[in-house]
Length: 304
Image (tube, rainbow, N blue to C red):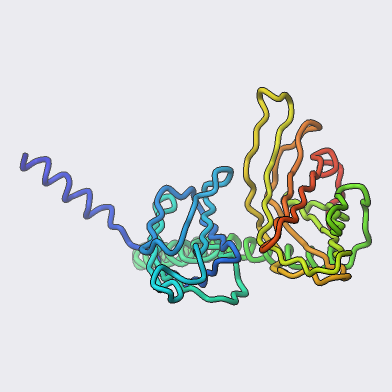
């Protein structure tokens, strides 16, 4: 028994649980907030029942969180609460705060983790080489420089990827419509997927043109994305998709036209599969379901 306790204590000593501090994340009940981590998430603990969370089935490193209602059971706004998330061997903790108007709905912790690891690796290498330099000479100094360059390159590549997406979105906003047949007209709403592109990382860019021909404003509740494989009715599969980016426009004014941009992660589609995009109205019954064929996605141009 003493041996078992000793082994357990040694394990705790060798494997400390150090949570990475995460800044405050603002949540509301009308938008879904996405948290993207470097590894699969196998533990999410939110301290209040005013918030709901779920690990994305098709991308287990993605967690989405949303407030249940604008007011809690006591009639006030949901109280701030802490959260604890485990991604791979990394631990994250922070605070969720309800805010009616939020600007940011996606938090990517992959970049911050890479920066932290790069700093740790650089520090360890520097310390190791420092000790070796006293006995060997100047050779290890060059090795240390190479290590720092390698770590900085990894972080820079991640940052460049985010910058590239922003540049691609700007190009997509200015692009002319490619398609006029991927969509539908019903209940006074005209919704079409006008443009499809992919980038060098095979992320999928979708541009929707939405015109409200009715005399009633259309307030959007949420947009849902699903990947559907229709090889046969018996084997039909439907998997939810989490956008890497989505415009946060919520109101389609009467007699006006607006455009929405979305970026979806790479997917292996066939001629028998499609991406189903569902638009739901907040306080009404109007609903639109748009099917974007994988054949169109596979044949789309690469953004340059």
